[in-house]
Image 1 (cartoon, one colour):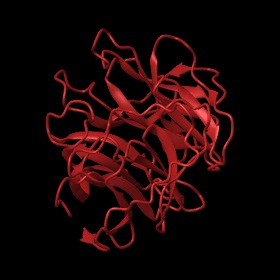
Image 2 (cartoon, one colour):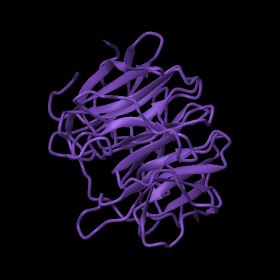
Image 3 (cartoon, helix red, strand yellow):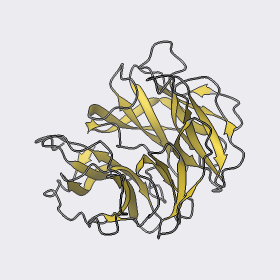
Image 4 (cartoon, one colour):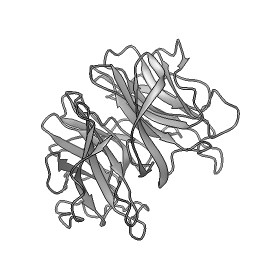
Length: 320
C-alpha cells in the first residue's frame, strides 16, 4: 500500500441547514482527540487519499453515487460528500427517523434505503422526498445491507433478541422494495450480518458465526438467494465482516478484526482486505488503522469499480 495526499487539517465545513426539527442524535460521538477520516483507495495504483476529515462528528458507511458523491450517515442524518473534495451536505429527509450506518443506494442512485433507529428499513429519494417505511411491525429488528442488481429486493439482517442478547438470532432475509414477500435466506441463528448480492445476482455474500461454536470467529460465506448451496469462504484466525463485491465481480473488499472480536465494535485495530473471487484463502491487506463500526458497513465501491471508499477513526497523532 502506498500513502498519498496526507490528511488536511480537520474541516469545520459541516452545515446542518435542512436538519429536520426534532431529529434524534445517536449516542456515538468522537472520543477525545478523535477524528473521522473519509478515504478512497485507488484500485489501479494502490494509493489512498483523504477526501474529508473532521473532529466535529462521527461520519460512517460511505455509499458511492453515480455522479461522484459519497452518501454517509452522521448525527442520525444522511449526508452527501463530493468525492473530489468539499464539505458534507445534509440530505433533506424530513420525516425520516434517525438513521444508523446501514444504508444502500438503488442501482440508479436515485433512492436511498436506510435502516433507522426505530429498527425499520425506510426508502427516500436522494434528491429529497417523503420517506416510506418498508419493513412490517413483526416484533423483530431490521438492519439493511444490500440491494439486488435489478433493484427489486433488499437483503437485510433480522434480529430477534432475547433479553439483553441482541444476537440471540440474527438471520439473513430478503424483502421486496415495496415491503412484499419477506423471505428467510438463512435459518441458522448465526449470528449473521452484512448480506450483499454479487453483481450477477447468483449469490449473497455475508459473514456468519455459524461455522464455530464459540463467539468471536466470524468468517465470510456465500449462499444462493433461495437459501441453497451455503459455502464458507474464509478460514483464517481473524474475524471477517462486511464483504463487498466489486462491480465486475472479480474481487471482494472486507473488514478484518483481531482474533476473538465479538460483533463489529468501533475503535479496533482493523485491516481492510482484498480477496480475489475463487481464491478465497489469499487476501491482501490494503490498509490497517483504527476503525471497525462505521468503516465499511455498506457497499462502498465506485460504480466503475476503480475505487473503494472507507472511513478511519484515528485518535491523536495516528496519521497512517
